Image (cartoon, rainbow, N blue to C red; front, side, top):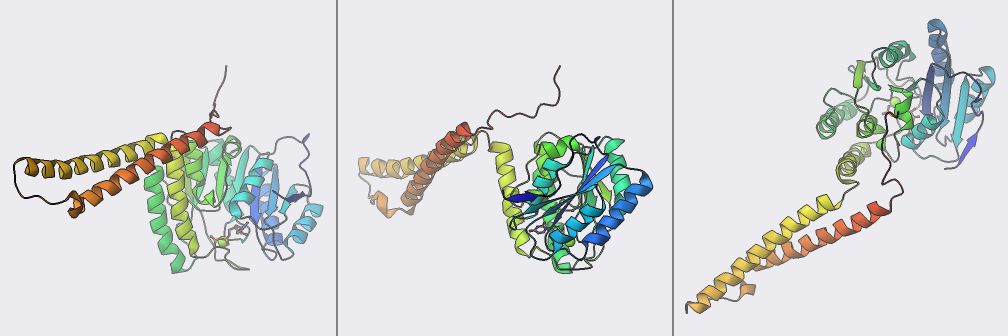
Amino acid sequence: MDEKIMTAPASHDRQPDISVVVPLFNEEESLPELAAWIERVMRENGFTYEIIFVNDGSTDSSWDVVRSLADKNQCVHGVSFRRNYGKSPALNTGFARARGRVVITMDADLQDSPDEIPELYRMIAEDGYDLVSGYKQKRYDPLSKTIPTKLFNATARRVSGIRNLHDFNCGLKAYRSEVVKHIEVYGDMHRYIPYLAKLAGFTRIGEKVVQHRARKYGKTKFGLDRFVNGYLDLATLWFTGKFGGKPMHFFGLMGSLMFLLGFIAAAVVGGVKLYRMWHGLSYTLVTDSPYFFIALTMMILGSQFFLAGFIGELVARNSPRRNDYEIEDNI
Ligand code: UDP
Ligand code: MG
């Protein structure tokens, strides 16, 4: 990925308590206010911290603003993509650079409040959560967004099995640093980070009701296509989480069942004809029966599924990550 690195975090520094990762795309007006607010909260609570702004190819002066913020405060760092890749790639890049014990993500548009940071930090550091997701119980967004969001979260809860989350896609989240180092957020998968964490074996996932505010400057970067894509991504995660390493278990089962049903149906159609011929009864051609064609289609589809399973296995077998396991401890 193309990126300019402005201030590489100094590796000899002590590990800060908190890394705040902020993905941003055309948010020039909000940034100074956001940075000042985060700095004030950190100072008041005595946290050591770093802020990592990830500029996702902004076309306004956001990057210049980040530069000037970094000049004023050495805790402010920034990374800038050459073009716009999306919120997930921005988060992933921020996660790779974060050095803090606790990593907190926050949107750049001032819809999330930095005042939540101390309590989020406490829930990770003291209550032992791996991940705490914000829950915008009272939202300041248009109805066209809040109603589909409810449906979306209900589906995500069912599919992921994380029953206690109401707001998967909240931009304000806190993580134990291991979590962000062991998940890969790509495409549009930032909507499902709790699910990604669960698939990586981090199951202590909590929620905190957070304040939400209306967007003060600029406009939202996501349209209604977020819901279509959101559902497709959920299907992908469910499939890869369950069968990613063993695709034949999915395609093989589907294919065999389909082929078998088709085969039995074809045998019945053929059998009936032979029986009637044998007993001198009137009979029709097998091709006159619609069941014959249904049976044929099922056998063809069944074989296709089976072949997809073989191809899937070849792909999975060639993955360099096929033997990457999440190892928690070693003695
Ligand atoms: N964002 C980003 N890259 C994108 C789109 C959005 O980094 O391609 C950032 C954006 O600047 C903001 C956050 O992701 O900090 C959430 O975006 P937005 O506020 O538009 O989403 P909404 O609040 O409407 O869900
Ligand atoms: Mg927003």
